[in-house]
Image (tube, rainbow, N blue to C red; front, side, top):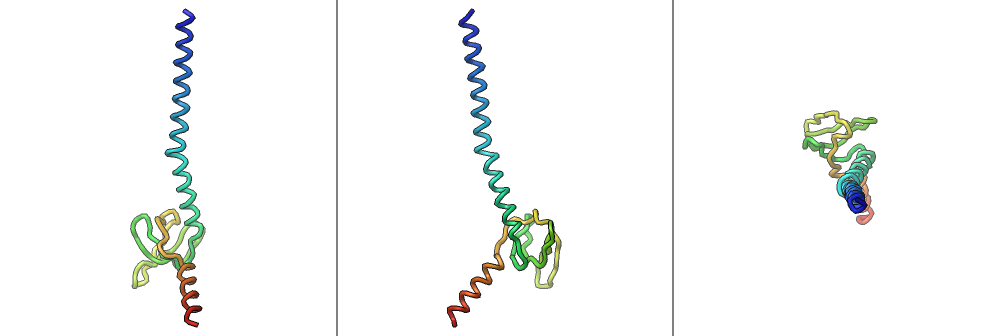
Length: 112
């Protein structure tokens, strides 16, 4: 009888241990990378500035012409079509205006 109780305790302990290992694996393989990506996306949206060229999650590409708290206005064509989007609709910032300005400054200094 003592042997049966001991085996039951070992099985219970091993089951609890396996559940804990599974929980840790799920955290490191799924939850943590997702949190890192969310943080990266949040930083990208916070650094958005007027003049940046962005792509939305719907595939619309254009230049940012104004920014408010949670929205921005995107100019999309040569006809100056302007559409307002939520900042969460940004998939990527393709060209940062600050990078363009740095390149212009560097090329001007080289020519001088």
